[in-house]
Amino acid sequence: MYSKSIFNNTHQGNQRSIINPVGQMNNIPFSTNETIFTTENLSALNKIHKFYTNPLGNQNYSDIPDNYLDYAELYSTISNLQLQTTNTNIKLLLKITCEGLTGAIHSFGLDKSMIELNIQNILLNNKIQDILTNKNEQFALDNTNKKYSLQKTFTLAPIYSYYITIFGLPEKGDGFDPIKIQSLLAILQKHNINPYF
Image (cartoon, rainbow, N blue to C red; front, side):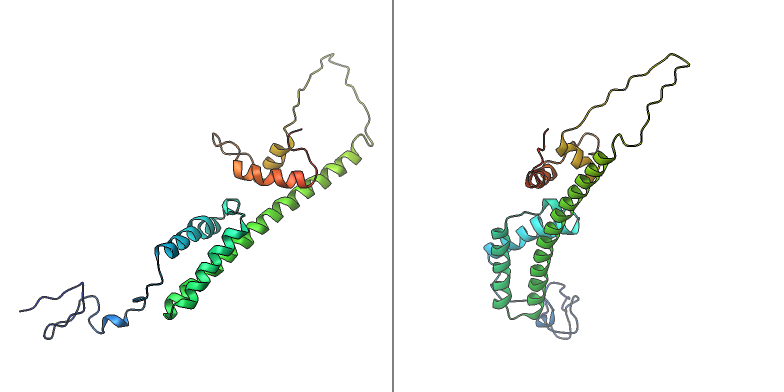
């Protein structure tokens, strides 16, 4: 008497594999004997997932690296893998990987552009407010109760003001995100805005 194996497709008499009772192992869609997935290639795939497609999927665009040379090298590695494989399913997965990598880079660029446009919008609004300040105002003093109140105001450094306007207040205890601060710093300097005064 023979027992069925769930690990192989060996036929023993009339017995078939429990996993694939109908066909042969070569009918499994993603089986491959190709040796294109070297340690270096798997490392590239893991890097794409960790630094590009994962932040893209989680909408953490500022976490995507801005080094175009790294991106080009990873894209080249995956494109070469795509050319080397004859398995159409693997080829499709590698194509999707290249498209995800490209999408991550484009999303990073669009995110930076959005931040820059927000800063430009804030600058324009500040100019409008400067123009309108002290226009059509009259000084009125209610003298009936003889009490006056004083109010103290403070101004944040521009980089923190822009941060709060664009990203909102940081979560309690988290503080300002240094990666987002770094992005803002470059954009403010591009527009000749001193980030700290």
